[in-house]
Length: 345
Image 1: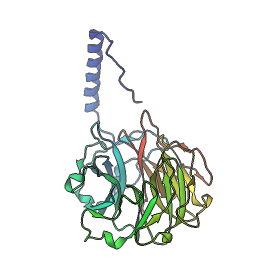
Image 2 (image 1 turned 45 degrees about the vertical axis):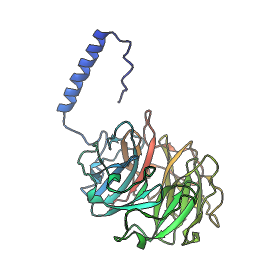
Image 3 (image 1 turned 30 degrees about the vertical axis):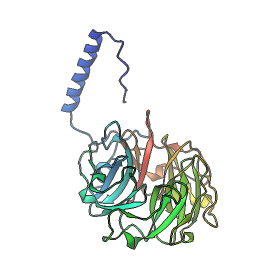
Image 4 (image 1 turned 180 degrees about the vertical axis):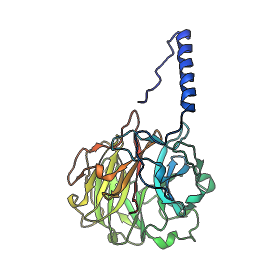
C-alpha cells in the first residue's frame, strides 16, 4: 500500500527529527533488498525482442523489453515505469521490435523516423529516459502526438482535433522519408491528435474526449487532402483513431481507469464520414481507443509514470453503452495512454 507524506509543518522539531530518522532507516532497508520488477504480478511471456517504448509529453523516452513487464490482474495499481521530472509526464506508449523503426508524428502533422535501437534502453522498469526530440528540428510549439512502428499496414490515417482525417500510403514512410516531412495543414481541422495503421480495406473508428465516436469505411476518405471524418462539438476534440471491421472489439479507457471493450457489431457504421458522433461509453473523459483481440495484452500508462499490463479477456465486451469496469487502480492519478500487445502463438 502506498501512502502520501502528510503535511508536517506544524509538527514539533523533536517529532519531525524522529520521523525523518525512521524514513532514513526505511530507505536503507529498502535499498538492501533485491529489486522486484513488479508487485503482485506473474510472468507474461518468455524473453522477446519486443520493446515497450514510453514517451513523455516533452519527448523523453526509454525502451524496456516487453517480457520484463509482469502481467497483473485487471484493476491492479501497476508498476512505476518512465521516470521524468515534476514538470513533465508520460504521455505515449508504443510496442515495437528492437529491429524496427518508429514513425513519430507531431501535432503539426510532421513525421520523424527513428530506429527503436537508437532509443535509450534499460533493464529496469522504473528508469529515466533521453529526449528524442533533441535529435530533430522540432518547432517551439511542436510535440509528439503519436508514434507507430513503421511498416504496420497499407495506409496511415491521421486524425486532427476537429475531426479531419487523412489517409497516407505506406510508401511515403519508407526509408527515404525525410525527417520533418509534413502531411497535414493545421488550418484544416487543427492539430494532429491521433494516428493509426490501416490495411486499405478497413473501417475507421474515431473517438473524442467526451466519448463520442463514429465509424465509416476508410475508402471514403479522399486520397488527396482528406475529409471531415467527424463533426466535433464545441469543447470536444478527437483523441483516438483505430482501424476496425464489423467483428472488431475496441478497448476504450477513461482518465479514471475505467474501460470497456466496445464491440463494433453494436456500433452502427455510418454511410459516410462527416456526421456527428454517437456515445461510445459512459465516461467523463475518454483517453484512448485501441482495437483488441481476446488473446491480446493491454498496457495502460498513467500520469504518475505507472504502467499496468493485463489480459484483454479480463474486460467483458459490450455491444451497448456501459460505464465500464475498473482497469487500473488510481490514487490521485489519471490515465494518459494505452497500447495493445499481440503475443506470438
